[in-house]
Image 1: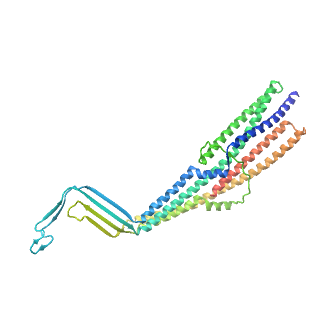
Image 2 (image 1 turned 60 degrees about the horizontal axis):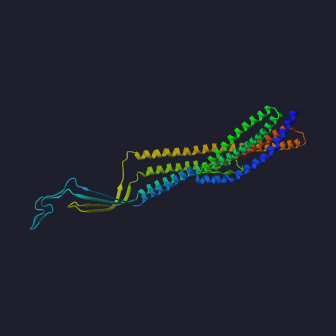
Image 3 (image 1 turned 60 degrees about the vertical axis):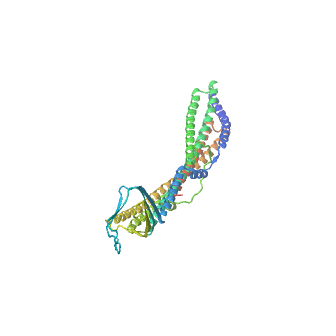
Length: 454
């Protein structure tokens, strides 16, 4: 009977001391937390979109297409080409004129009177060539090539949008998981503080032989387990903060604190409307449609191969340090290049492009089907977390009411201390489960928004 009285007194003292120390510990933790800047989920998403390295690389890849398109467009303009060859003649250049080649003149006779040879000795000489070529019929094929590159740029821009959506969803999930882990770490920290205080009081009572050593060992065992759980929670918290900093594209050691999980707001959304949004917004569907257009333009380019290449051409040819030949030549006119017989090569290329178009159409249909399945899965998961959150909220309310009743009974000496402690533990667990369900709900909503292309 005496031991029972001492144990009851011990627990009562622990409750009082723990309550005071927990308040002090919570105040200290709040002060430490307040020193770090607050980071909201919207700010985290904005930082990630602006600074994430994968998003930056995708944007740079899209910018590269602008230069490629501009470079291809320059082929529409006149093309200038100059080449100069300087060197030594390997063989002399001989020009032989038979007698009378230029006719017979009165009083002079044949000219030249005898066979005459003019020789250019081996010496340094320079050959100069220059052309100006303005494409005419090639303009159509160049325009098709530019359009194909523009479609490639649009596909890459969809990659940028897809990468942004991935980063946004990952940041939101990481943020809400961090809140849940923070809640668990706070609960574990409070549990460690309470058990350490209980151990201190129990050691004093054990020294006075007011309680059994088994009671002290039970408290020490629970403390060791709670300290392990706290270490796991704090390690996970540090890792998640570093991961979130990495997603935001900044130093992983930057300190910050997160806001509480927002309450759930009703969202009028059906599965059909979610799938319609996904079909309209998902970058993968836009990419599949753009690739189909690319295949169609590639077929037109293959057909355009039968058009002759016609261009306006001006050419110049200059010879220096070679005797008896004109030093400069120049010609202007229309240049035509055409391959009339290709042994059905162009026909085979067109047939190949037609098959590629069919493949692109199948890819569009398959992508739409896959996205519809993904949206359905994410939508159902989101609905499940909504039901789980509602269940956790009701459980939290029930445990809070049970704690209120237990406290009232304890004040009236109608309940034992251990019963009050048990109800307190259940209420704390219900609070944690509710925060966990809120985190799961917002993470599931982030996945659903990503699946809808928002």
